[in-house]
Image 1 (tube, rainbow, N blue to C red):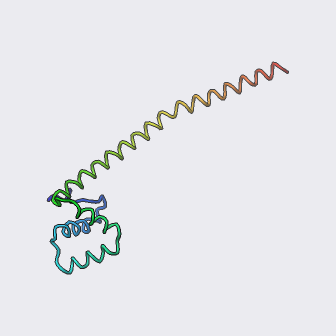
Image 2: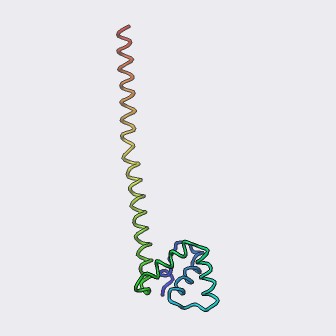
Image 3: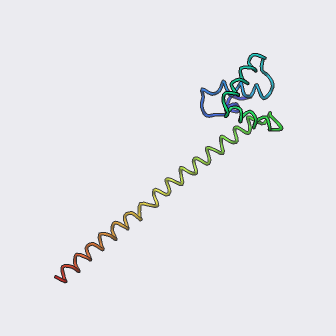
Length: 118
C-alpha cells in the first residue's frame, strides 16, 4: 500500500496514529498495542467515533481509497470556495466606485442648488 493512500489526515505527524488505526481495523496488532490503542480510544471521543465509523464499513480494504477520495473532494471544495471569494471581491469593486461617484455628484448638485437659492 502506498504511503499516499495511507494518509488519512494532512498532518504529517499523525502518520503513526493512522498506521495504528489501520492495523486495529485489520486486527494486526499485538496484545499490548491493542490494549494501549483501546485505552487511547477511551480517552479520545474523536478517535472512538472514527473507529466506530470505519468499522461500520463492509469492505475495510477500500478505506485508503475512500480517504484519498475524501481528501481530493475536500481540496476541490476549498478551491471552489477560494475562487468564489476572489470573484466576489473583484465584482464588488465597481459598485463601491459607482456609489462614491454618485454621492459626490449628489453633493455637488446640492451645493449648486443651495448657492443659486442664496
